[in-house]
Image (cartoon, rainbow, N blue to C red; front, side):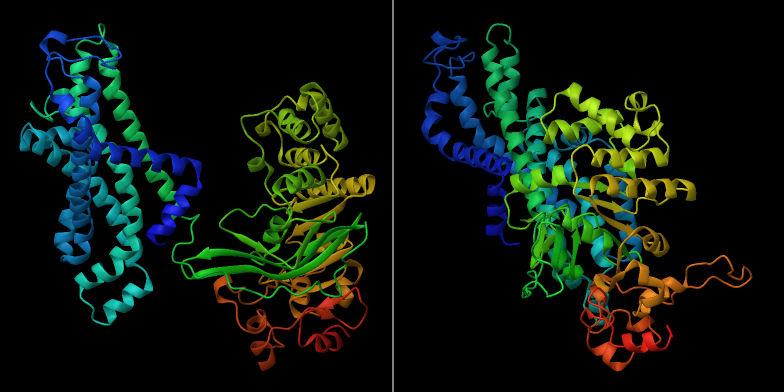
Length: 630
């Protein structure tokens, strides 16, 4: 990210704009104050010594009758200058110590690392006092003391960042090519760790300023006739009971300056960190096709329409797209199951439909409509209200979805007070009613309990009850039976089926268990490597599945008559990583029927030939049907 881009990113946030404005004001004061108020700050008037605040002297005067406010403004230059000089000393020294192990022989690097580890164990102020004794009292000694006291922290940070970069392949390639250690450091390591070092230096400027004020306040920093905020604060405290403003002025200056630098550093860290586009290739532009023929686009019965959905995340190598081109619809009262191995994109698809993909992730689609509302183009206030009232999420682990410090009833009631405007009493009554609806015994007493007092099955029931606090038209259940015993699993699935029957809500059930999906859903979507590879009615899953991956998932399910002495069946190999999707079919390396065509071209999801309600993405689907299924 360039400097101009970073500044624009910082200015876009209110906090960043405020901190940048404060730092700019401090710099302007440091430059202009000596020219404007310099003479007034040095003018002595013994007759007006220790004058109280007035229109002529807003903060009063000191022992020699000099205006305190003018001295505070003029001392900005010395205070900021010394703090920035100390930061430069600390950063340079820390960077040299932190990168030395990468350049020096191993034995020398270990000695320096041990020294840094010992120095980091001591508090920074204690190190500053130690170095102040060594370098002597005064401006130069304080500057060196604070700078060298900051160095161990920067050295540790530089060591950590350097170690992370040094293990990458391009560093190994440079060393194999015979590049010297110094060149590797200057050309490959430092450019990759420069941004966090700059951010921490910005934050460190606020700490250095406070440290300088502390040393001058103790009398071992800036000496007479020079003065900075710390020295003025010490002088003001001597008469704080007679004139509090004399101490309040320099104290506020220290607080504002320290806060400005720290806030600026934090905002810059956010701009340069995971929420920025640092050194990333732009998201590949993909032509968004019109809605495919098999995707319904109209009708009041369509609850969710997804067309060519893609979910992308930034990485050091560019943008990864773990969900690529998913299309399906869910109608009112319909139950659709999504199955596939871990990493196939099931949960990401559901989270994208629920608008829960957080920045820096990006969601694009030819169409993503919920209850007729386009989610990607509608204002946040519209989608927030719609999703909050008409969509319910049942997560895999409700223990992590409930706030452990709040009672179950109050968390359920929050949904009603937020989206329905109910009073606290009415919302709590509805929460108890919803807990009763999902068959939680003693619902009124249970509503006053905390999540840890619920069993796993009861927490899952409470999560479903939270979704029913409003009037959901779609319930997304992401692995709702994981880690539950078989009896509780059956109860939860029966509960979802009952909710669907009573409310006519659609259900999107995500599961690893294809047998469960086949028994509880109307349709099954089989996902692999971020794509739907087969879409078929659940009642034809065992007899009509045509994709080799679907057949493999069915074959690995243990049956009652399975030979217990034989090893369990498994699908050989593993799914490809999102950054290593092949050009052809992603399942080709694991498929016994794969041909050269499979490895060269990725098949489209098309009608399977046995009905419009069956789609499959496989070049050899007919072969599977005629061979394995006959």
